[in-house]
Image 1 (cartoon, rainbow, N blue to C red):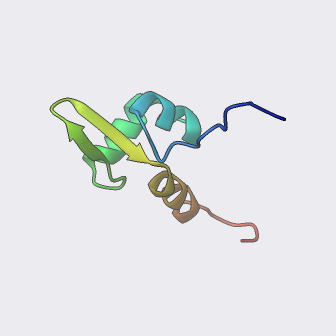
Image 2: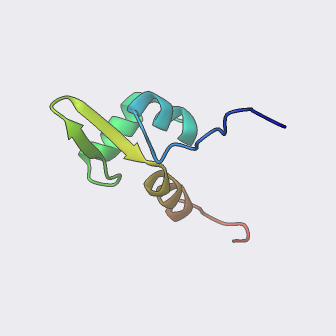
Length: 68
């Protein structure tokens, strides 16, 4: 019997993880958020998280050339 805990994929991540996931700097991530190009969720007085599906959608929308 395998008693390994199941790894749960997070639905939302903080800025550092979101930037790394997308492959750009935290500063650029914050710029995109300030410009309204990337949504963010405020879950506490100073806690903001990015939804993984929003990050994926943003990257998909930025695709140029190639085949879809």
